[in-house]
Image (cartoon, rainbow, N blue to C red):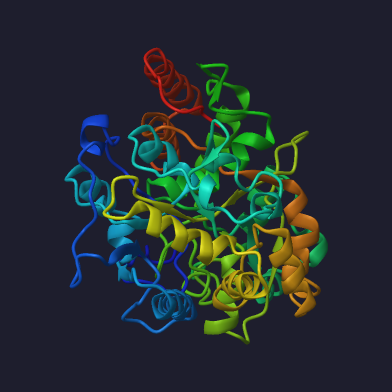
Length: 450
């Protein structure tokens, strides 16, 4: 079979850039002790590193970041200066890690659940609990704060929840004489449908192939579907039938030639550059793709369906999302914490609307706060179409993205890469990863692993 030309990952920023791949060594306690904020024109200004804006490429997400910081700066003496860092450096590189290790980390920054313990264990995160408005903590939906909380203290505030599904090209299904009743529910069905959808010019499916936190994030649901996990009671539980099955499922998409070895455009989460152009017929991605497709290819006809599960498995998806965090050793942590709390946790009408605009106008996410969800519904969001499906059918299957120390994440990442692209046996990869995790846990003394 002749397959489409292999795409290359773009390093340019996307209008809606969402996930993460922060690789590298952990932030040591010694390095964390020297943390400080980076400089600016005014030494009292607070630096805010992010990969959204102000971006050189106009986008609704960049506009939101600019509007929020502009509003804060008009009403406060201590100014917040957002610094845009391209996704290739922030997500796929080690820019943030290097800055903190060198003692020049930003005052405020974006952090994912997957990389939370790197900074928490290093003492880099400020406790935000004292700065939260009354009732704000209770406003967050169940589980939204769990992976950002240690010993009852909140160390980062989530701005979104990003559940995963499979997007599919309705026209491709029609061309392959497949109907809505053929949407795959199991792994075996997915492989069968993916084979039928694959032809000389199109892959049947697309999963992430680049190693990183994002790949782990989108792979975890397949591990959970069979009852698997990575760590429990201080020991590795990764060497399991569930892990072997999940690794084998992703490997099989490569062995059968129904999935490419690399994505186009902004990567496997970029649906306009892959699904919409006909590079693939099914693509695993997140809720952010609804905004991407509406903005960039509004006439493209697509649908979504839950992630396929193994026979006898449980329907589950990953609910990640980025959060604002404060450098505990920045130049003015208290002012930075007040900004973060104001930006994401304000309980007044203006604060709720600010969060609503991020989750439904600038981007599409599930709001992590109940009041914001209700405000969005009052505006007509989540009441029809695919967003309603996310809210009513996908949300109940959410499980929070786990927070693992870098060493645990890396062992899992190596197992995925070893099987998916190198074709190694899932049993050996799972066993090796489990041994690495167990050896690390013997001396681990950091925050609880969730």
